[in-house]
Length: 206
Image 1 (cartoon, rainbow, N blue to C red):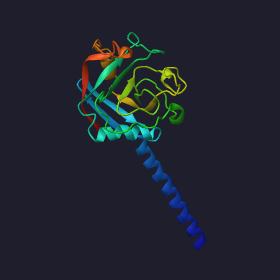
Image 2: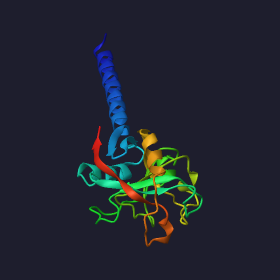
Image 3: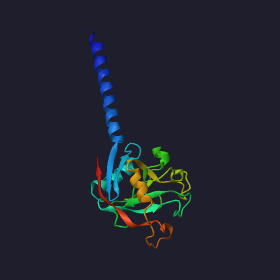
Image 4: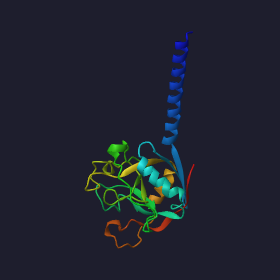
């Protein structure tokens, strides 16, 4: 084998090594799993770091600094109590009305991420665009109205999906059906605030 052939083989080997290393790193980035240890049981979620990096980074920042420990799922939306359109079924959690520790993040719409609000999807709660901070919701059933172009929000930009429940959807559905007659001054969420919020004892990476 000539010196030139040897050099070509070495270069080819290095290219293959770099390729497989990048694949492994990519797969690691795509599969960040977290557990929400709640008073109703554990919910395990896979976060799509590669598809929704802004939302995932924001969620993990709150998680890693302990802001979700002792927080709760405090709101449940069902077909029967939903005051929006199109009707959806979700549970909402996070730190609620407490002072937000970090600034709001840029909106990652589903036309950018390629994700959709299917059953088990976790997504950022928001009011106006670019106002998502700490709170999130989990879908029960498929809800295209929450995607980009959907009519749930008047702006048509949808919500920022960033992961999906891979274990514990039975817990999510159980929370969704808990009593929710807690009084509130916000007319939009009347009939949706849980009488006894479900505590998130611990939120941690797996």
